[in-house]
Length: 131
Image (cartoon, rainbow, N blue to C red; front, side, top):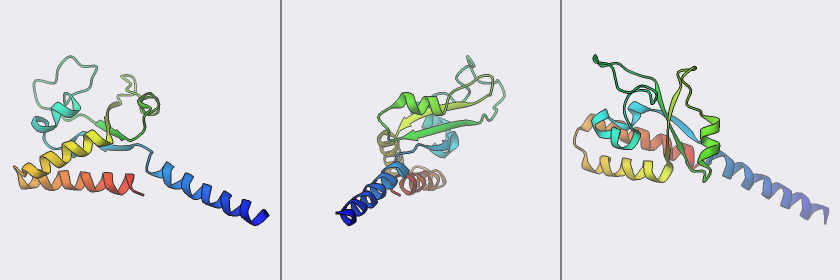
């Protein structure tokens, strides 16, 4: 009986480890989703959410994209909060929507360098979420 309990505990631990590793969000850069003209419809504007508009001279902002599989978006937002004081801006995109976006634009293959960047992003997602 003791062996069975130990075996069941071990199996439960394995399942818990496997499910938690692939369910944690992955944080990527805004630029990992291609040029602004392509990604803006998915991610929103390319400047921080708290600014009414971008700079008159193009400027790069450190905007992160949080890809998540969890059903609890609020927990993801709590873990990665947007903060004016800390100058942290996150965009939250579900895994399924992200994969659809990447598959669509990879298939279009309009500019080879962009397609390669999107393929790299897709590989990062697959590696992270299929651990």
